[in-house]
Length: 373
Length: 120
Image (cartoon, rainbow over all chains, first blue to last red; front, side, top):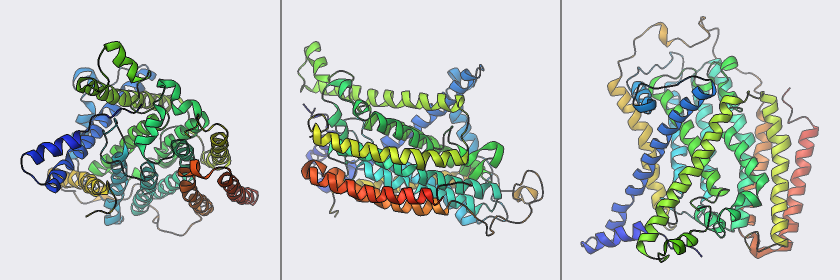
């Protein structure tokens, strides 16, 4: 049974129309609200992730980590951001100023834009566009252009090599990533993220995609880490070899844009793993059982509100478990070499993901009920 | 106004997403001190005077990967419509995709054999 969910958009537009606004005006007044909300959520998510990263890295190395700015140093990322905001903007004399500025902007825009398709509940997303998850795959291809651009525009040898590595890495891991998503899409018969989650929410955690797509889950997670340039795949900015890779010449706000982009991308990837494989906003046991236990009708407004809130909490909780895993991986694993990285992508993940796709198709033919009809 | 539903939000979010970096850079411009001239605008090269520029011709080694990438990316795009409507197509579509993927696997094996996927 699919929950009808809260439809805030319809309620808001109807309320405005009852005040005498026309339908179009009500729609246009509604449009920016979810966008600003999601943008704020993404930025807060980044602040929390940066704080978590610093605290967990400190714990991994038996330090205390930030502790003066706010309780437990919770305001430290905000202080860092404000500091970068008032820093001098240095553009190297020999760099191409226009491309140098455009690079970080081009890196940040697609990762923010991808939040368009991240659902936090049945109707809690900005827009349920038809191409859904494919939009994210398309947008994530734009980012390497920005990285390559900033590497080239810096006119610095380290930056150029870092930019080239970033581009090679993204293109090597994009295909296994897209093929892993394709297997999930095949089971849901739809590209829409809403349909993908609904397909997983029949029987609580037992119907999550991770049980039917264990190989796809591992492929997706490895590729997501590589696309985010997280250790063990952070070659584009390997300190020992390339200083800071494509970021070497960047300072102040432009550096902060790269930093922000990489953390928004990390949170986004974690959210997408939870949507594609861990049942998105789904509660580990069927939510209808809760309504029976609480003696509350499933379709009553109170219970719908309760289910919607639980959905948001579940999505964020699952995503942050994965963020925690990514941070722990970063501080406990060594970096791979560039030839190992490319071998892993092309000679291992690509054939495996093709086989995974064909096996999924074969299983879908053999057991249509278990694999989405 | 929009023939496809939901894409008005895409346009709106594109504007908002674009405004974030632009506003951040403008705020930075207003708040930050003006860059002082001199040594600090020199290209960084481990504290030495930079020798030559980076805009030179050299073997970037990755171009073979880029070529193979184009092949497989197009393949993935072709497979998307197949996967979405697979539940209606049945066994024949499976065999067709099998042949399609087999041809590309041969291409991958060829590239592998020819050393296009080697780093050194």
